[in-house]
Image 1 (cartoon, rainbow, N blue to C red):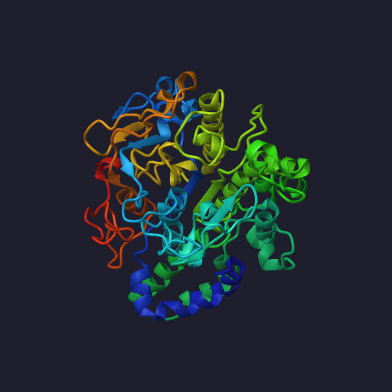
Image 2 (cartoon, one colour):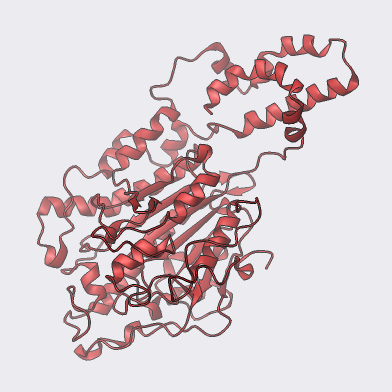
Length: 516
């Protein structure tokens, strides 16, 4: 409901509502409004060099020193708010249940835990986590905010979100579009300010605006029980008024503090076609320049707009995607092969054989660290904004989720995942948690391509707990429930190596929770 309409109508509701006994009895028991909980998914393609990415600690407290020798070094300032779950596996691995392009499977099944269609689209056969969460926790059940840098795409290799089976939900790639959806809340284009609006802006309650009528109403000859019912209802209205609609923090001032205005958004929005410049930068110079703008200024602006959307409480379910079929040529990185080709160690689509690109491991390492720095930037933004007794980050589960573990092996076990923020205290922080119960290892990513040799075993050693259980944990953390109003215990269509057995290992992972 629009807050302004609510406030203008609140006087009449205040007079009439106490007689709605069924509503009163439920509402009078309402708890004080709490800060909303949110889920953010920061998604990157092509996996990583696992044995450079994972810190040595597999289960136990994390320290800044433990991160400094890894690709996660940029996250050291936030180590006390990190949860590193070790041992999860995504569903629908290549040649296990389906034999379709491993990238198609990894994308379509990543947030759905379902198979993908065998038609030309290769779309997921179920709705994705972001939509399922959004329906429960978003204001009005609105759709999630799904963002990406780079060029717009509806191809399965670049689509992560699905609003329904076989229905892709393409990401918004233009910061201007996201900004324009918020400007009306920041004062631009709003209706003329009334006397009531002005007095509300000064901090008066909508109930105060009809105080005279309420005083006369409460002086009527009524029983003590009725008087109490009226007062209870007014107390509830004050709580509701405080907690709904557009927060006071949703303002042009808040936008300015985040560096969001017409000029900065325009500068961060590509001014023309985006060319990924794949395979040796064969695209146009202008298109490659637009790609660089989108990956750097554009991605940073998307993070600011996500934070502003949180302040305005227009969304609580977010995805930010960095595509993988691009050639990095910015921020002191000057590659001549696209990320996907580098992840294969060959510089192209071929799999196996000789490592054809000199220095390929260091190039992949550069990309891994660059992504860690971007994830750290997002955490820094959310951790800089106060909300309730903490920060935006504290009320959010902000998960860095990869497409694959290692890009050459295309494996989905022992995924490199990190979560920041406790979602209001639900999740553990400052620790690595081995969810499998036995050593899962860090893989062999850098034990390949030595001295121009052949590609060897890049797979991880262990890590086979179904990711469905992590998703159940996150859903519970942000306040989702099952159809009976109880904790979520099942997510997705299947959780094993076969696709027909369904969910065989239900429940969240208690070890990841602050109570576990």
